[in-house]
Length: 307
Image (cartoon, rainbow, N blue to C red; front, side, top):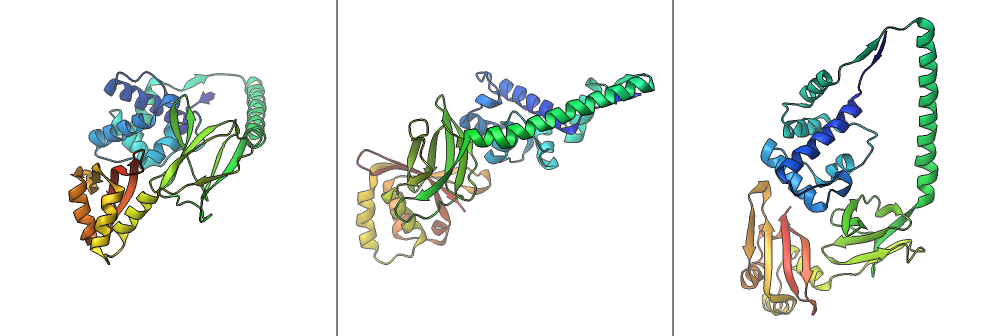
């Protein structure tokens, strides 16, 4: 008796399809796939999952498990449960069970010699596949990719991985890539952009600059001063007031994202300056995550989160 049973990783591929179909029903204007799933689509999906399941998932998890065309490992079961609930099932176990009923086991009576021949053929095919994958993974991939170091321009120190993000740009679509030990791995002809709220965005076209091995981030001076005000104790409030008048645009908008999905607070220049002139314990727990400057380098927009 020969029985072919769908593996968990294969069922996970079906779950990814179900999640994408569910997303398209919620956002009918989206007509793509996981490869074209944008950063905004990811934020929409996170919000939708939160609303439907009352559970949170991270952008990194979606980039790691949902966007790739192939998955080598099965994600944690708690996350599988969340996305199974998102597509209308109570858990990952129910999703597997329901899918198994739709895809019944294939059973066929065969003679023993034929079974052995099929087994040899299957093992041979599996060996070819494994060798091909190893060659692609460790030979072709290493030839077509390069490692780039990320550093701060003036201090030559490694970037802060918690606040720095790197993206590959394809057809104006930015796809986040992981940063490990202040390094990124990308294809040799990629266009990349590195972002950090305390530094200026850095774009690099590796096709035009193939010898690039290090990306240096230039500080956003006003953003760095502002972060210093948030974290430091006040010494001369009058001087600080004058400095804030210089670095903040008259129409600056400040958004503070509150914890536990409680929304956000909005401040204008006068209100935010007052908070910085007379700092509180809660102010010191805030972290800048986004800054925008105008042509004169004055800050026009600030987004903060509570740590």
